[in-house]
Every structure is written in C-alpha cells, then in structure tokens.
Length: 136
View 1 (cartoon, rainbow, N blue to C red):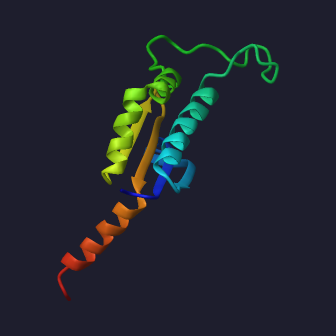
View 2: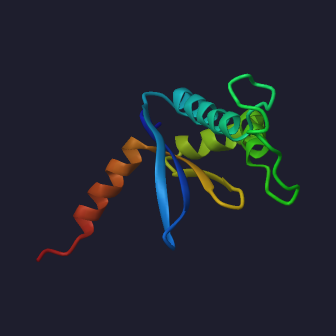
C-alpha cells in the first residue's frame, strides 16, 4: 500500500506559439482518501471559476456571457468526474497500485490537468534508475 501521494493541478495553453503550463496547485496528501478529496475539490474549484453564475453581484452587468455550443463544457466534465463514484474507485485503485493518474479535459483554448502519484512509487522508480544505470 502506498501511503503518501503528490497531487498537482495545471492549466496548459499557447503563448507566443509555445505550449506553457501554469501551476494551479500542489498538495502532498498523507493518505489515499485525502489525495482523492483534494483532486475532487480542485476539479470543482476549476469548474466554479470557469462557470460562474451571471447573476452574481460581484460581476458587472454583461461581464459573463455564454460560450458557443460547440465549445466543450469543461466545468460540466469536471463536475461529473468529481461526483462519479465509479471513476473515483478507478482512480483509487490505480493510485493504490502505485500508478500515476492523469485526469485531463480541455476547451478551445486551455487544457486542465489533474495529476496524482504515489510518493513511494516515485522513490522506487528513482532507485531502480540508479541501480540499472551503467557505471561511467
């Protein structure tokens, strides 16, 4: 069983003709349950910021407008993933097995990525790389 998990959230877009990533958060979770909670929480955090309520008094009139129907609905995808018990089970199984988990979705300008991996698995990979590296 893997005891600690490193979780990241990143947004990727194009700038000056190059793909750039903007870190949106990192969390070192001491348990599998907290890693899953943090990933769900961040997915909802992104969804709420991408899909604000137009009637919110914090926004000036006409500041929030609907996007075209052809644009992928990232907020709904993230909300659906965070509330899908079957998806959460799959993520939990992968993380418990020591596998990297990547949840990604995108709209017409940005890709949103949630990553989680076992700290123990990362350590083991580094050790194996050192052991198998040829001596100079």
